[in-house]
Image 1 (cartoon, helix red, strand yellow):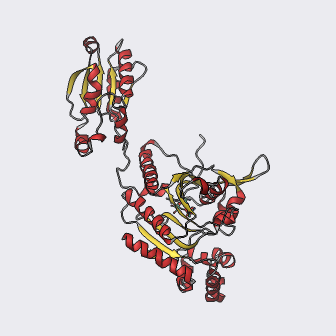
Image 2: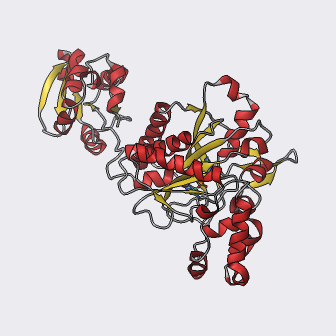
Image 3: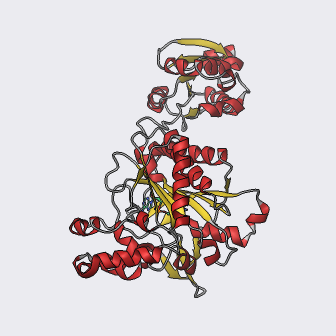
Length: 446
Ligand code: HAM
C-alpha cells in the first residue's frame, strides 16, 4: 500500500460538504464586494517568490517545494498566492482591463512545514488582493470583508488583531531602535531570532520560543516609531473600522512572516484551534508590484486558510443533502422499468440511487436504509402492470401507491418530516418545484 505524503490530506466525502460551505461563502462574499476571480498555475518560477515573498523569510529559506525542471529551469510549487496574482496583474495588464483591480483566487499552496493540527504541507487558501488604491478606506474595507466572511461561516469567538509596521521611511529607525534595545542580549535569543536580527529585526516579534519572551516583551513598539504619514494612515484605518463597529485589538507584535508588508497588517484568530489559530492574515504591500517589474502601484490583501476554517466550522455545517429516493426493483422485468424511472427522476433534479447486479429486494432495501434516502420507490410486477410505483416515506414508514408520472411531484412535495419545517421558512422560489422544475432543486443542497 502506498500512502499519501506527510502533511497532505485527502478530503473525504464526509468532509466535502464543509469544504463546499466554506468555498461557496468565499465566492459569495468576494463577489458582493466587487472582486473578480483569477486562477493562476500552482507552479511558478522560483525567483517570483524569492523576490516577492522575500529572501529572508522562512518560506523562501526553508519551505519551498523548489526544483530544477527537465528543461533546467528553477521552478517551485507556489507557497502563497500574492506574488502570483501580482505577476498575473502585471503580465495581463489587468489594470486596464478591469474597473477595479480587486482579485480573488482559491486553491492549493505548498510549504514544507512541520505538520500539526491546522498546519499542512499542502493547504488551501482564499486569497484576496486589491491593486492601485492607497486610500486607508480600502484597508478597512478589506478587513471588514475578512470579518464578514468569518461571521458568515458562523465562527464564534474570532478575534481581529491589527498593527502598523511602518514604511521604508520609518522602518530603518525602528529596526535600529530594536537592535539598540537588544544590545548584548541578541546572543541570548534563539537561533532563528539571531538570524532575524541580521536580516529583518522586526521579525523577532514572530518568535514563539518561551525563553525569548521576556527579552521581546521589553522591546520598543513600532507604533512609537511611525512617520507622520504612517501614523495618519493607521489612524484613518482605525477610524473606518470604528465606523463599521468592528472590535479589534492592536498588537505591536503582529509583524507577519512575509517581507513585503508595510503599514497595515492584520489577522483574524479563531477560537479552539490550538497553536495554529490564525484563520487569515494579510496587510498592505505598496512596493511589491514595482519590485516584481510592474508599475508603481500600492496593494493590499489577505489570505484565509481553508483547512482552518473547515476545522472551526460549527457542527452540522455543510452536512450533505439527503438522497431523495432509492429505487428498489422486485426482480425480472421490473429492473428495466426501475432504471428508466430513476433516470427520469434524476432529469427533474432529484437525487436518486438504484442498485446493480440484480440484487435481492432484501439487500436493496438494506442499502436503501443505509443510504439515508428520504423515500424508497418500489417497482414490482403489480405496480408495473398498474402504471404505478409504491412510495415509502422512510421517516414515518408511511407507504402509498402513486401513478408513475406523479412520483417526482409526490416526493418533491412530500419531503421527509424533518425537512418540512425548514422548507416552510424558505421563500417560495426556493421550494423544490414539481417534476421538471430542476433548476430550483440545487438551493436545497446545503
Ligand atoms: P500567511 O499568513 O502566510 O499569508 O497565510 C495566510 C493564512 O493561510 C494563514 O493565516 C493560515 O490560515 C493559512 N496557512 C498558512 N500556512 C498554512 C499551513 N502550512 N497549513 C494550513 N494553513 C496555512 C499569506 O499567505 C499572504 N499571501 C497573505 C496576503 C495576501 N497578504 C496580502 N495579500
